[in-house]
Image 1: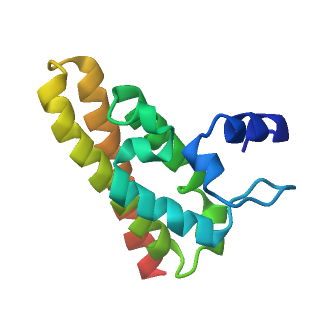
Image 2: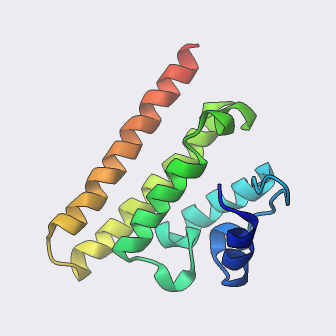
Image 3: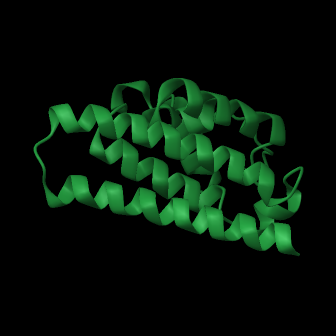
Length: 141
């Protein structure tokens, strides 16, 4: 997680992931209702919705979103406190993957094929496979 100073800086800049989510001032962990709002925003606004609106539909916004998901959602602590266990986390990741896939269709028309674009595809596939594997593992326990 980030420091309190970094939290305040991001919040003052209007960073979506920090401004919309209610967070505990001590731990800076987002509350569960705030995470549901985040899931809705991913579904409604595309991958860039997790960050500033001006960053939407850029390669960097997609990489930032994947990093954000790995840092926040794909943690054992999140699975333990999430209602329904990993199923709840999986639903969020599913929306993130759909949002990034939608943005990838946009990229196809605006960016020439390149290793930079291919790296986003690769990271999305990795997070999707990891999410499916963890969900299957969680449901078997």
